[in-house]
Length: 179
Image 1 (tube, helix red, strand yellow):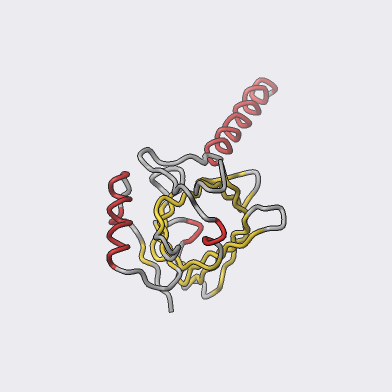
Image 2 (cartoon, rainbow, N blue to C red):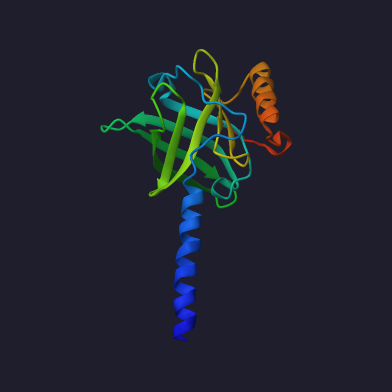
């Protein structure tokens, strides 16, 4: 029994450490680059989620928004809200985002459960900060955001082409309903 404990405890801790390490990846997918000359103040405010993959943490959610505001310590407050149409209830998750490098480079890390951080990378944005393409650290995380509940077809196609070129399976995107 003691031999089993001597093996099981270190192996369990190692696996837990590996899971935490992998979940803290804040890089960019191969071939993606974060927006340079990024203006964080122009990015603040409310964004409507237009499209995403079917994430467990957003399962059965419509009317999804993300609102960004500055915290007193200079980090960014992230307030995600959505309506679970199966459970018929609103869900909210509040987290924090920080710049990985300079605040003029749109490569951020976000946490809803510290100390676990995930990549949040704005890889395309229009000049008026009305539409944004956001990628996580891997090809599993992708969001199309808009300041309004709709997005022009030209912007949609531009974002889809960029995501496909990087390797995303854009045919698996969920197009979020807003009402």
